[in-house]
Length: 475
Image (cartoon, rainbow, N blue to C red; front, side):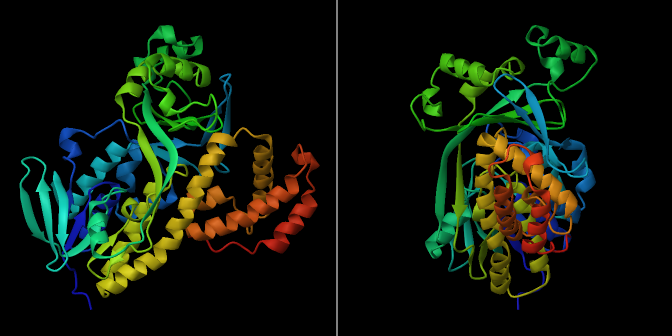
């Protein structure tokens, strides 16, 4: 049996690491955290490479378990749906759910991380910043850590070793030297670049439409609809914008690294200010007046890479375990990376608190979580195609219209996959399997149809009853 309340050494004080440290410290564990970055509460959060976060039910649940729901609420901005911007600048809101009870929330990564660090320390965790993991001596369970301030090395007894240090995990690299984890990294071939729309009061009047000038005079903060995730879908690429609590929007351009076809845009073709300016004015013309510094942002901010990480094994017997992005990094297009990681933290804290054998706990954690992390990885890739290429497609829109009708008529059997993923805590694997069944049904009934009036709803009702079992009980 694992000794009651073993000492925990946690690598990584990002979002998942900070929440896990809080949950474990609240349960009486002695938790020591080592983070390679400087303390963002003192030195500021490193921007320019941070996609804003979409906080959904799974993430809120993790925060509520830690007693932090009310603490986070003031920095979260409600998003009712996707606001689609076409090339001409017209907009259309596609709601995520039935009403304002089914929404997601935009939250700044930096603000959230700092708030979680405060919570971890209040709970009793000790956090050492500027300490990079160099190596692990698996024979003695000692860590070699490098102090970034002076380059000195220190050795630390590991205790029970947990890794929440992200997709580039140093602990995962050390574990690979001990055992084959079956690591595979599938690059998407697309990168991302962060830009910004400032709060409306900071925008010059000359750049604004008359309606925005009037809104500015009234003291409004946002230059666009605040309660939406804005999308400029352009086929093989897109821009998105998520609101921040102070009135700005974090804008992210997703674009292939190299051209997918002759004349197609790609980061490799945007090498001058002139080429960047022409590209944005052509494809995102309504956003350009709201981004006075977009050329400087584009030149200054790094191009982030997008990939999915798969591991066959997340742990080294009972000595070390990976979770969050360190075990299963995914692309950000379902807004579930953080939410999935928070589910990991809640699951692991509960298993460890049960005082089982460490090796058994780690194996059980992987057994429970890996099918679900694999499922959300696949759904996130699906959602990228949907967001950039299908949200303005007539067949897709008809399928969504039929889906809303079937969900209203058969609430006990039909729930859109997006709702299962975002508004419930049904296992991701269940949501994926059920979503595939439902999509097949939708495709059958909209094939060759141009409007909902053409769909045989009686036949669709019969198919739902015959082919879809009642939904599992929702937690």
